[in-house]
Image 1 (cartoon, one colour):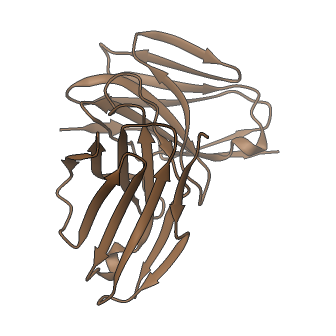
Image 2 (spheres, one colour; image 1 turned 180 degrees about the vertical axis):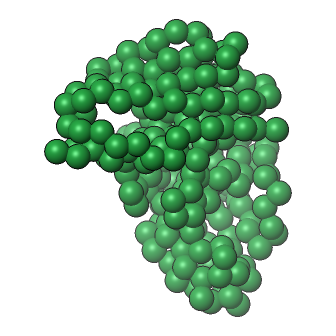
Length: 115
Length: 108
């Protein structure tokens, strides 16, 4: 299984809602990532989990809260988002954190719209 | 800090060869990745260079010069399905930083 899955595929939420994005991989990878991608822009790193511990937070606002319940799962909890947070949210995983040769495998993404 | 530069857009015809250049300045460099991303889809891995020189993989090749902070992706025998964005991504410490990407349009 060389796949990263993400649910939901699409999400529309209001600014007062609380929702969660889910990501799963069964490749035995020990590093997992959240990226945000706006239209016609490259993916921007948000968080890195290494061995289930948060190792990088790229100064992301606290309305985004990551969680890694186990080595296969990664969640992104969303609360009080703004319309400018509308984007494609990509999850990725790699065998080890990206030092040396560590290809990142990306999931298909969740397209989030904040009204 | 990080600074990655790629052309914004390139066009080419089917069957041709195209070279996409990338220059970068980054701390803690440990290799350079190229990813392909079709519109509305996730990025997929194309190549990785850690040592200077050319890595060939079928129709795609990638070159790296660490001393010059320079890489290129060479695509041969272009096909219509190669129309996509190509992202240069230097790896440093625990993360990749993606360049702005080069949108390649292949025409018949």
